[in-house]
Length: 325
Image (cartoon, rainbow, N blue to C red):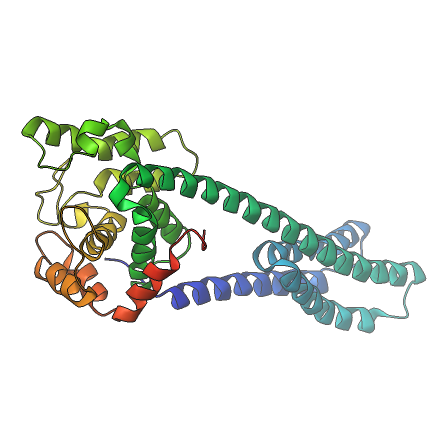
């Protein structure tokens, strides 16, 4: 698997962005310094180059909000100020223009940083509303199976914890979270007499039940921002040795999110009370899942899973409830 730690990923991305901003400031400053002010054509280029200082400010605002924009403005001010001081005392109009540049730089930084912050807050609230709607839908589906209320929420918590331990972050973690949350949405297409049957399913009933991953994936094709989640939903009953369904894929051909989910789902099934089985202890559940590494489960996922302290699983399970929602 090609994974990296969350901290390293975020640090590298931030450093890369800071580097882009500093390089942009440096190149613009050098170009501005080295471009002569005569003849008139070159003067126009000279003036245009200092207008380009707005670009790194806008990048900093987009990447680091108001604080980043202000720091970029400060860096530009320090670079540009030395150039201004060397030229100060020249043409009065040019001095006025240079003062105007500082006003433009700082007003742009403040306005851009503030507007970006407001936009991100609005998007965050919209995302929370969207996630809330998904949670409400999943709770309704879980309530349909009376023995599995809050099952999907616990599985999501377990899957997120394993994924984080494996270094998955950002959009990949969000998609995995949605896939885990919506994994059984396809059961909306399974009749109650099959879904809620207490005894063993017949061969024909089992075939109908095993269609729910593909039904779920088809449903999510029409739901925004669930493309990757739909892939996890479709593959969440695949097994590492290829004996799962619906496609019988094996090993790393199974999406990583689905391999992580399989462990989280089985763990919750073992540690939750069901009509057909009692709950086992966390230690017993971990031991049972570890025995199936290489057959049902990805050995690399299991290796991470068994290293998680039991207290972590208890904390996640206890945090999932109506009061927390």
